[in-house]
Image 1 (cartoon, one colour):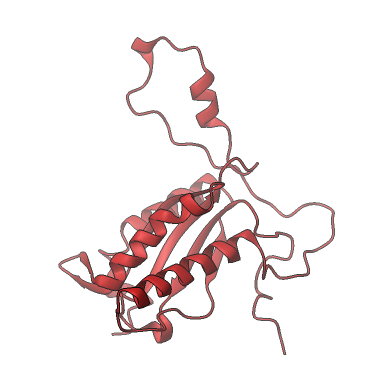
Image 2 (cartoon, one colour):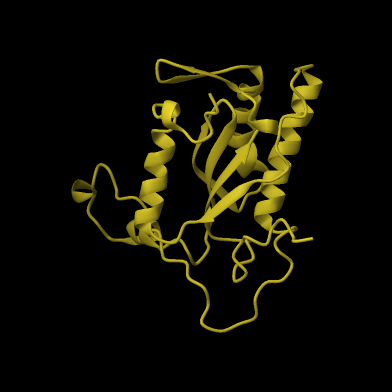
Length: 197
């Protein structure tokens, strides 16, 4: 039987980098709330999901959540490991630059996202990332939501699909496009591929 992680990049161990992650609800049921008038109205379970997403950096100090959105039956996140070689040093350069206070920009530029490419040489990763940092983060998030929902006696459990999907963000353009996609996801719900209605 084929391994369910075989679609993932064999040259990357998913322990660092910047990734666009999608996690769906069990059977893609609308468990986290509803969208009306281009606005997401989270229910109790959706609120727990948001609490747990915001808490990820507390439990995983090397991780940053650049953006996220909670939809009725799925979530999207941009997850980055702080300090990896895939995040260019634009922010550090700004912090160390000797710029007079009067000339510092009011809105400093966003960090520049470097390019993540397969190595020219080297052995493929063969464990398919079952124990990667990304898998641990997503597993922890799903477990925390389930645990808190049980504690608060909220129905609709189990709430998660067993798998998740990730996409390696390789350059600034891709990063910006995915940021925009997340920001506009609620407004585009009627055309969303996860909207089974």
